[in-house]
Length: 324
Image 1 (tube, helix red, strand yellow):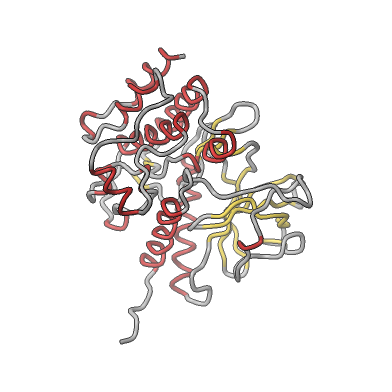
Image 2: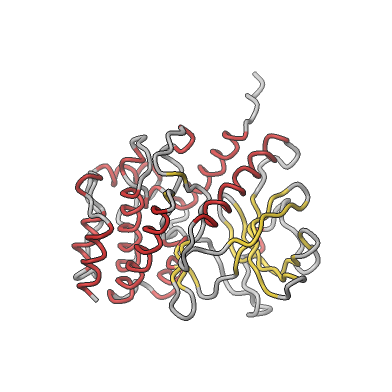
């Protein structure tokens, strides 16, 4: 039997499923894998096994007759992020290349453009210093690229992987910054839906930035395509796993799971497989608290299974300020 034709929605769903499985099977904290290039510490890159048929040649390819690619900063199921030079404004930028499962397919091309525009517009809709800045969306070889500000520092996931769990006072500050970002996002009528250590950037100078609005949706969006497995299971609110709709409370649950990972060094629900992770979440028993100290009460309040009993943003802010 011939396979069913791939529609834009199914293409996007496949990519998102790949991302979710990556986060569980890779045993990462949800961040993109990245290392420093041995040849030059000026440009970070990933290992050579990342190179595939959609990857451009760094230093030679110019995207949209303006952005010269320098190196690959990171990769995930939905796209690869490049360091590039803006040859018009003479500044470094980050370019997110939206991956195409079937580059020759018109349906894939349409889906990729829909995905890129949705992500860029969602991030641009939130006016806050804690949201990554979007400069443009361009096309090269039928592939959409999102042009973003280049962030210094590293993600929370990378920080924990490199140096172990962060101290309570630092995770408390990160929590307060993320609460501000999430409230700005919710006030703009959006739900991020993918808060996790790999999407939280700890910039040089102390700025905390929430990135990757690729699966963000409007509050109350009833589209079935925004179903349960869009996101990273270890950080996904239980109501979304049950097929519920995303709301501010589901972002706050993900914030609690992210803070747990930051202070404890691992996700609160962390199995050896996707099914094991989901089973751990269903048991309503997170991993033991070993280092959280005064953060434990806040994290437990944010991780409440019932959204109606979950700590809200105001309560979480007051509790975190009390710790500081």
